[in-house]
Image (cartoon, rainbow, N blue to C red; front, side, top):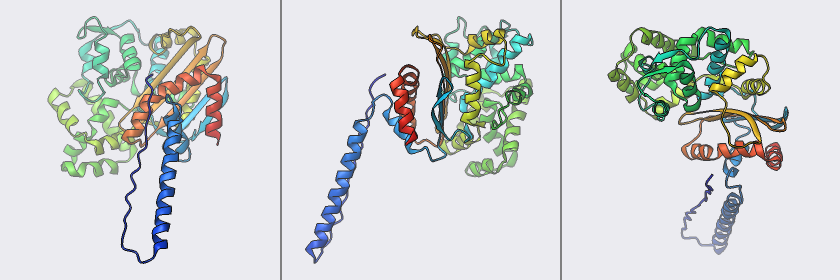
Length: 385
């Protein structure tokens, strides 16, 4: 990873007026000198941070008492860090882990055949251009025939490896939304909100504006006035309609045009929430290969686990999730000595600079926690302060 440094430059604007007493000028000068010294000291502290992870660790530490971050990491079931573990935050694409579990379970039970071939147009009906950071197109570019048939397993891999939202909603259609949400109950996830279709949620603003005959400047308030159940139901209704009559490209373009930053914030805030505790429970279960059969884990590994060149790691998987305000990560790993690591990181209400830092340093944080005992101890001490 390239080294990443941030310098904090502080400009002090001193307002000087005519003063009749010399000691007032001296006091003001002394105060300015103190502020400059403090700024330089803070700048030096930033320069001393680990260039790979330091800025992000500072963010976590500074926000540990807020509702903007939840962090839970364990090594062999012993905690490295526990911050806001019962705080429910938007999952973004981390929610796709539940759909992957449902996929592997139905494959094991024979309810779906992972090798079944599907026409690409069935998947593409859920695709909204310019709303997924290029994930869907990136997945299709790896296929031999981008517009040909694909297997259910390839669709699931596209959901997990590339985070295609269109693939996700197609799998919800095939697996059944009720079955997906029943899996949350089966896993005994006490703080997990219901899952609802992702691409359909992108169309909620257009639907609300048309159904209520309101202007675009009234849209944000109208969306926030909806309770969670009503909001989710609109997405479900649209999702069911599309299975019979998908939206045209023009309708999708009109919906996408409404997604300014204020509407994206509503969308991000309304994504399915859960806690770090919920997802740590899931990742620890998967890491230990508990609860389900070997056949289940063979299929899950086919769509979820990562291929690594590092021979010291024998099995690992991770799923990230992000919006313009959120960056999340859920990870498990087992090394050659049988040590097991799990990490859940959820964030919310990030500004642009915080999002950039998180995006650049979260993977280094994960890798160092997996591979470096000294770093695990350092994180443990730092976040315990």
